Length: 419
Image (spheres, one colour):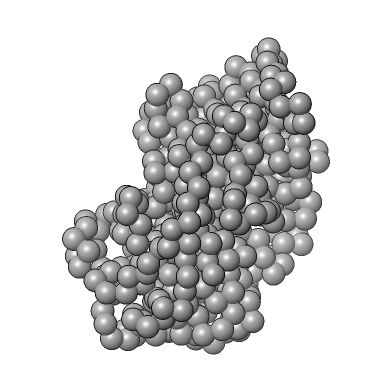
């Protein structure tokens, strides 16, 4: 355990407030962040649709017969796809800064809000955060957008009126590029008031999460798991964890995926003591500086493990509950470097899996994952690949309450209702 010095940056630049929307906070800007809250400006990025999305079960990188893999049986189902009705409800165009198009990097669904992070491929540092109201699944509304100069945004989460942002910055006022930032919501719109930044270690903040009165952040190769008290904006002692890629909280545990090699570090949420036997090893997450997410459901950690596909481990013992291999790149005619499982989203008995340029896949368990045990092997069936006409690559998926949001890189967002 250790403590890290905190670097705070005040908002001393002139702030411009626009009163274009009398019912909300209006557009705002300073020297680093420009916030758009104007409804008509935001609506121009959204296209509403009601298009069926087929699920292909043949020629999608899996064989036609059940295939044993680790402790679970994964099969390709030709009939299961008929049981799903997927409707593409909206697409959101990615924002641009100075003519440079940003890529959607992550999505977080919390209640009736969806938050989306954006960054720039390569130089310079540029980023953004979208806030969407998804209370009406037939008509999601883009409520707010924050545009960042000199800052990439890797991931975003929220709790209450706080928005937590994992970043990389070119600001030389910090000892390292990795930064954690808190922004504020007024209603469902971002404001500059109360915005604060904290320097982390390593080259980029990689993820954020929130639970109770704490926020959590991870940073990369030379990074750590940071535990933050948002009320005082102070660090609770943090834990050095190399190649910390993603943090999630659930079932009284804080879990962190680490890479090269794949490891799952688990801590008791109450006092941040490490669990006996942690970290737990798993197959995958072996490509340096890559993305691997984790979600805790029913005492199980669902890990997007890169070349290792999806690995499902007991969050208590590290027992391998199930595995879903990534699709075979050769059978898809793709280079293996672009077919990596970078995110998995779980709700009820469904898994939506982001496989980079191979697209989004749907798999199904035999029961709701929240009700199944964490110390016994469980079968998972591969249903197939979602067919989008204009999907080039996928960076992240989020799924909750029968609502699927896909971060499609420079293709922006795809919002799908699962009926």
